[in-house]
Image (spheres, one colour):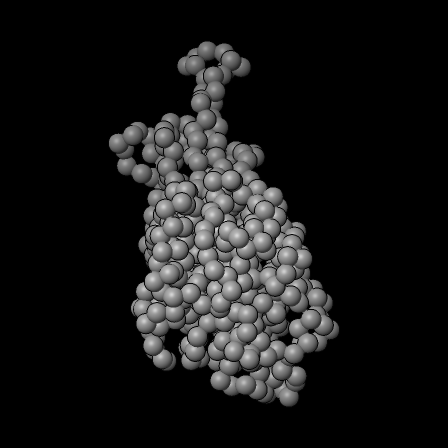
Length: 452
C-alpha cells in the first residue's frame, strides 16, 4: 500500500481532484489512445466567507447603519444577509425577555446558509436574566442559564470548541457571533480596513504570551511556555515569565505584533505598540467585555483602538476559570491553518457563555490556497489546513457498490503549508472519497466528500 509522507498536509477548500489516465486499444495503434474521463471529487470549502456571514443592524442608530454599509461594501456581504432590527443601543445591557424577542426576529430573517453573525453596535454587550450572558454568546446559543450560571460556577461547554467544523450552524445549530466594537465610525472603518488587508498576508509577526505578577489573572500561563519552540520556524512567539525574571508586566514600543495575551485588570502602553492586520490580543480580567465601561477595568475595545483586529473578555464576574477565556494554543493553531478570526477565537474558548467576542470577523491572514496537479504520474496537493496528529485517508472504489480501497493515508506532524504526494488511482476507479476528522468529534473519521 502506498502512503503519504506523514509530515504533509491536505486541504478543506472547494476544489476538484482530477484523476487522469489513458488506455489504448488491444493490439491497435497506441499512438491513438483514448483518454479516460476525469474522475472528480469536490471537497468542502475551508470556512466561513462573506456569503456565510450576516450583519445585524440596529435601525435608527446612525453609527450602526453606517458601519453596516461600510462593512457590506468592504466584504461583499450579500444584501439578503443584512438584517435590520429594532434595538435600543443606549444601555450596556438588554433583558432576557427583550433579547428573546430580538433573537426571534433575527432568526426569522436569517438566510439558511448563514453560519455566523456580526453585530454592528457597541451596547448592549450583555443579556441579563437569571444570570448574565454576553450578547455574542446569547446570539449564538440563545439565552440559557447553563451558559452563565450564578456566581463562580462552571458553565456549559461549547461544542464548537477546538472543533474541525467549517459550518457551525450545520454541525451544531449555533452561529458564532462577534460584535464589531469600535467606539467611533472612523475607528470602525479603520478596523474593517485592517481586517480586509490581513487576508492572505501570511505574517511572521511577533506574538507575546505574558505571565504577569497578577497571579489571579495569569492562570492561563501553563499553556504558554511550549508555544515558542512548537512554532519555531513558522511563527515568532515569545513567552515572558515576569514573576520569575523581574521583567515588566506589559510591552512597550514593540512593532509588528500578531498576538498579545496577558493577565491584568488594566494593560498599560498598549497603544505604544504597533499591530499587524489581523492581530488578536486580550487580557484576562473580570469585566473587560462589559462595554463601554468595563466596570473600571480596561475594556477589550481598547485593544481595537490600539490597532488589534479582535479581542475577547467577559461581561460578568467569571472567576478565573481558564475555560472561560481564550486558549492561545488553540487560537493560534486554528488561525494559522486558515480559519477566519471569528472561527479561531470562538474555537479557542471552551466555556464562552459569559465572554464577548469583538473585532472584524472575516480577517484571514493565513488563508489557504490549495492546489492540485498531476506531475510525473502522481498527485501533488499543496495546502496548510490539516490538523496535526489527526488521521486522514483518500479511498477509491471501482464500482458503485464495491468495497472502498485505501489509496493513501497519513497523519500530519505539524501545521504548515506543505505539498503532499499521492499515487494516482487506477484507471478503472469510478469513485473517490475523502475521510477526515469529524467536525464534532476529531477522534473519529467522517466522509467529508465523495465523488458522484
